[in-house]
Length: 353
Image 1 (cartoon, rainbow, N blue to C red):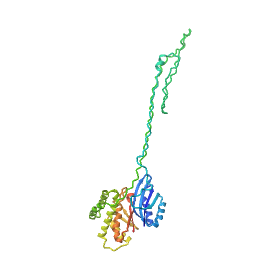
Image 2: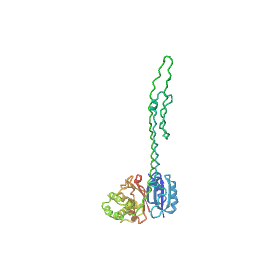
Image 3: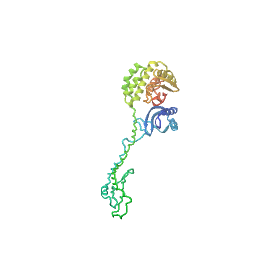
Image 4: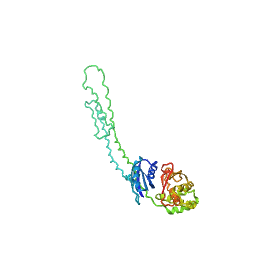
């Protein structure tokens, strides 16, 4: 028997554990534990499975043929701190590009007026002088034209001969005041910072909180089978890394207690008979359950709420503590193929020796 650590990358989480768990079970492996992580690249699933070494290639071929899996990596499992997922994003937090340098706004220059000088000399033959503004860069939408005044008509200064005047020259009109145009440059648009991707954080599992479980067991035995509120309190009271292992230990000791109370006088059974005669009746005192082959389908588990965290570890430990003494084996393995908290319609537990 070997233990493998399988890391997969997929686009969607819904139903992923069902597909991968089916491939694991069909190739003779059992799932020890699993963990989901949402990443910028997609959904990262890490599983530890145990099974025969000769089936490793068949399992890898089944994973490679699964259309939902973008890529995967299978390696021998080693005890110690978990390895980072091979497809995890490595974007570092805080790498924001420096803002663009500020652009100094050009100072607008007003146009000098020449109307007073030209108004004082209405009969001058020279065109009025217009002083234009200094050449400065302006935005394309600005208008920097200054109105140019046409020269006024100048009457003949010499007296005319005795000829009747046919028409009189119109009185010269004063020139319009030139406009002072102030053009403000458009402020540079602020550079938006790129979205920061949260770093990949892999939770390191811890052992159970044995002290918390030991304090809880007398209450579970007293209030059995109405025990789910106590188990939810246990989940909240222990560290997150020890949540699943503490649930498993509470389930294992509760299952062993139920076996000693109700079934210890019976004869040793095979696995299927133990599931039918002990496992299902005991579980039905807690939840609605159906037996299909070597799998138990639990409906509407109070511990596994849709969109929450999976708590199937309690039922796995419960069945191991209940069925292990009945079949006389300590190698019984119970793992969750799918869970209602991960989007499945029901929780499915697979049982194998």
